[in-house]
Length: 266
Image (cartoon, rainbow, N blue to C red):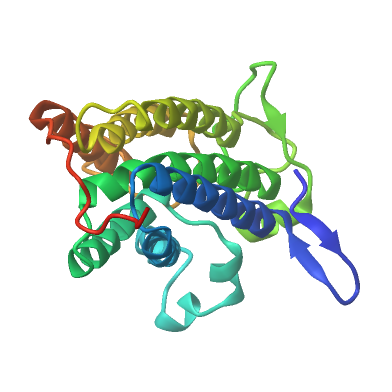
């Protein structure tokens, strides 16, 4: 809808990049606030979030490149291009790599994974919601054609040039669907975070709710980059199923609350 927030002869600020950065900043503020309440060291959580954000970016880009190999990408040189920087990514790919990175960091610093994940999950949901507004402004992650009254029509040539967004066609605003779903997810997770009964309760809830919402939204998506599994579901839907199962397991096991190995000095 509005790919460029500011564009002059000598300066260019993409709306997508600005909103993604804003989402990361606000999400990080939520994580640090919850960390203090849970007696986790804010400095260590800050470092953890920095690594998780970097891993999330790399993972989302990597899965997008894998899914688009042979069409958008045909050689290694295609990866290191302006198109890769300007394009979006596959969030589920970023989520998986971010989880692996978080596990490595937390084990190295002897921090409870579930306790840390419970404070990160609400911030992740908020950052993701704002990032989806950035997707909407750029035209990426667009939906299928629709005649519904809330369908949106993209007209900016930049949206088509950068992400292949169809112009002049009414589409499902899947970016806004997910933004609203993640804002609701954030509100629920934040409320549960200060009332949790067992470790992993917030993380498990996030995985189940996000997995379900993303699985459903995939039916309305029409942009490339999510792959196809045996013609039955997209790669993103398969990951969503895995998230729901893993989150359900956390709720069934119900790990008892514990004091962090490194409590913040009072």
